Structures are given as C-alpha cells and as structure tokens.
Amino acid sequence: EAGVTQFPSHSVIEKGQTVTLRCDPISGHDNLYWYRRVMGKEIKFLLHFVKESKQDESGMPNNRFLAERTGGTYSTLKVQPAELEDSGVYFCASSPGAGGSYEQYFGPGTRLTVT
Amino acid sequence: GDSVTQMEGPVTLSEEAFLTINCTYTATGYPSLFWYVQYPGEGLQLLLKATKADDKGSNKGFEATYRKETTSFHLEKGSVQVSDSAVYFCAFKPGGSYIPTFGRGTSLIVHP
Image (cartoon, chains in turn green, purple):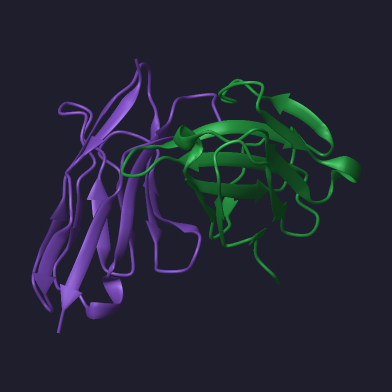
C-alpha cells in the first residue's frame, strides 16, 4: 500500500511569489492533516480535514495560507504571497476512521525555502 | 502552556554505543506519550508510545518509560547502529485530543 506522498519535495521561491504544495493521503483515509516545522523548531499543527471539510484550522498562521481538499482526496496548501518566515518543512499526514483518533501516517514533507 | 522539551542535537555516537535522548513534557491531565523518528528522505514514523504512567514503550531495540512523577519520557537504546541515524521527535497527545504536540527534534548521527 502506498504511503502518504507530497509534492514537490523541495521548493525555492522568492518573497512575494505563490507556492502550492500537494499532499496525497493513503487511499481511504478520511482524515488529512497539515503540519509545519520551521528550521530547528517544533512541528506545529496547521489544520485538519475530515473528507473535504475543514474540521480544525486553528493552527493556520494567517490568511496568506489557503488549504483545500476538493472531493476529499488529495489536498493542496497554497501560500500567497510567500514571506521569508514561511520557510520550513511542511508535513502532511493522514489517518483512517472517525474523530481522528487513529495513528497518523506522515509524508516525507516539502521543504519550502523563501528567499 | 503545553510543551515538550527534548535535548538539543546533534547527538553523535559510535556504533554500539548507548543512547539516551531526554524528553520532558508540560501538559495537563493524562497525556499519551510518543517518540517519532524521521529517517533521511522519509516521513515521520511512530517509533513507540505509552499511554499511562509507568508504561514502557519499545520497538526496534528502543525503549522509553512514562514517568509521571518527573513528567519525562526519555528514549534509550543499548547499542545503536549506523542505520539508527535519524531525527527523533518526542510528542504527546492530551487526553481527548488527536493532535500531537511535538518537541524540536534531536538529530542522531551514528558513525561506524
């Protein structure tokens, strides 16, 4: 069974540009999560989808970040316009079941560098 | 607020050395405790967990014991291998929550 995949693995953009990150969860997993790790710091929760609905977006830093999960399959996270402090590794995770109580399976992350 | 503190890295060891990575947490209630590992180029993987006081989680030769009195969950391995080189994250989930709170991660480098 394929794991969680993320694309691209690495993105380098200039301040003010737009970047879209993609996450493909494990097939059949209703729950999808986005996290971010700024260099050397903790991994922080961004948001949680249940199917196509946003269950919890309390971790989204500001309105420059937009996450979508149309059709309840893959998800995208768009940063527009990107700022220097957005640099970091963005992880996606998915889990089966209702209520998000199951173990989360993480992808390898997308390393975003804003210059 | 809730937080996890783990020792800073990198931790550099020779093969077969003993490993300890310290982790302490600040949380209300009775959290579940976890260690995740990220090998180069891969996603985070759950390494082990413990859900109540005095429980010992173990996997792949790694162990950690849930110490409520010291709010700690230190990771240990008796004899590390080069293949253990990775970043290790301590984490907890408060009771009733499904979102882990992570520490900053500790990079482990094992030399032959």
